[in-house]
Length: 331
Image 1 (cartoon, rainbow, N blue to C red):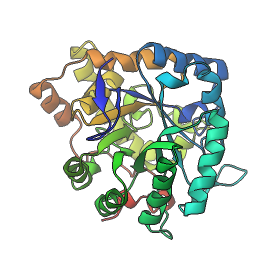
Image 2 (image 1 turned 30 degrees about the horizontal axis):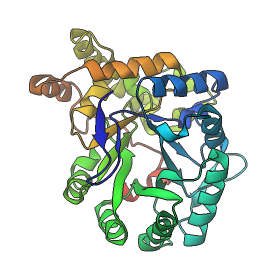
Image 3 (image 1 turned 120 degrees about the horizontal axis):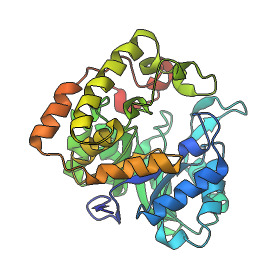
Image 4 (image 1 turned 30 degrees about the vertical axis):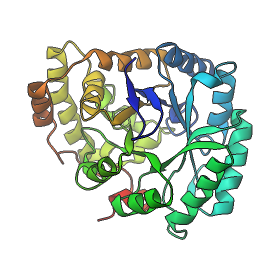
């Protein structure tokens, strides 16, 4: 397993991380036994970064990790997002970044995970009612108390990143980054590189769209929230599947899969970027690990970017309500 550093003075972690959300939420039912087997397979392959959130399945994901990590906690780097508010029916209600909410969320997370500390703690989104300095300041107190090792951010823009970093050193920014989502290249990526902050990139397969396993038929599955996303709907999906087909032709020349090429492209964008793989099955994990064997040269990258041009994707990342919650998308 290749390794990368989480920020200028941060921890050394695996070059790929395992995103665990799909094991508990949003993509339809997941098999508990298979989920735990996938976590164990990731650890055995050398992946030590596990990414979760206290709102993934309303605590289910943290309890799942607790079970899976019995006897292996010291070898794992756990990243936790917090602050998202949800109703009993699963709907998102907003975000809470108040200092007292930070500490309360952390207390419950430590209990559910069965651990004394969190390696990386990060607000899931910006709370527009609370200055970022107050949210980060509260986490900084938890660092001093020994409950948190490092602080991260998620889906915020350049100004908020700078303000947060002045309050306490930020190790990483978690944000969507893929061949279909390259908006961070304008202002956000230059800012984090200037400040020595790493990127943990989620959505590297654009929620499965770049896996070559998606079809119009799958978009009709009622329990999968992707059917509500603009990129998976109507004419947008038709146009986006054409981009996937163009990438598939390149993948075949590389004796690789579409997913492997998409992951390898993100890996090639810099040693300060760590892709998070949202696998919830062992076979999908093994496929993703194959991206580490792809060594893309400049010509390969140019051909990939020609097949999937900048801003060629049809549709936004989320619906309008969710897009409005992303400080990273504000211009």
